[in-house]
Length: 247
Image 1 (cartoon, rainbow, N blue to C red):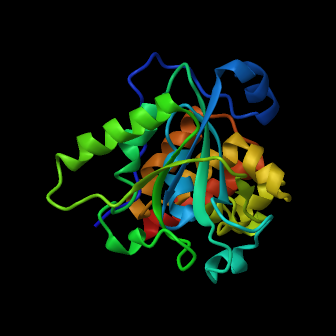
Image 2 (image 1 turned 30 degrees about the horizontal axis):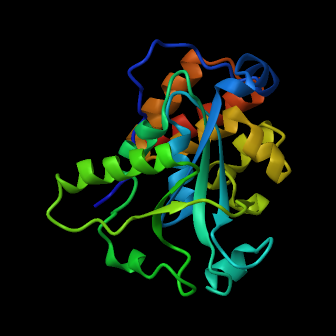
Image 3 (image 1 turned 180 degrees about the vertical axis):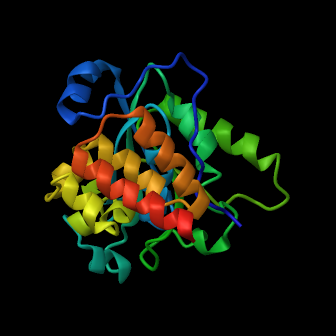
C-alpha cells in the first residue's frame, strides 16, 4: 500500500518559510526557483504529497503530453486527449534538488502498477518523471535504477522529455484537499486558479489536510504554532484539530 508522504525535510540548513505570498515571492528570487513535473496516478494526491515538503514554494495540478490544446478535466478523464494528470513543483533550488524529488517520487504511488503501462490515449493515470534537459534525464534514470534495486517487481514508470505545454488544471482541481475544508479555504480569500497556485499557504495546508486523522492533528498543530496566519485561518484550522482530536 502506498500512502501519501509524511513531511520531508531536506538535509540542508533551515530557513523559515514565510507564508505571506508577496513576501515569499520577494525573498526567493527567480534564479533560486526551479521546477519539476511528475505523474503518478491522481494529481490530487501527488500535489499534496509534494506540497508539504520543506522548501517547496508552489504546486500546481495540470495536464501534459497530450494532443489537444487547453483540455478540460472531463476530456482528459474520458481519454480523448492523450494527456496525463501531472503535478508541477516549484522549489527553492538552494534547499532542494531535482534528484531529491526523483527519489521521493517513488513513495507517492506504486510505480510497479501495470495499469500505468498503457501510455497512450486510453488512460490519464500514468507514472512518469518528466525532464527538461539531458542532466535531468540522467538523474531520473539513476533514481529509477536505485529504486528498482530495492524492489522485486519491475518499475513501469516512464522517463519522458517534457517538450509540450503544461496546461494548468481547472480551479476545482487545484489544492483539492484544502478546498474540501470550506472555512479554511474561505479564510484565505482564494478564488481563481492563479490564486490557488501562487499561494504558499495553500500549498502547505493542502499537503497537511490530505493526511490521515492523527497526522493531520500533529502536523496542523505544529504548523499553527510555528507560522503566523490570518486570524480567520487560525480559527478555521483550530476547528479542524478540535474535530480530529474528538474522533
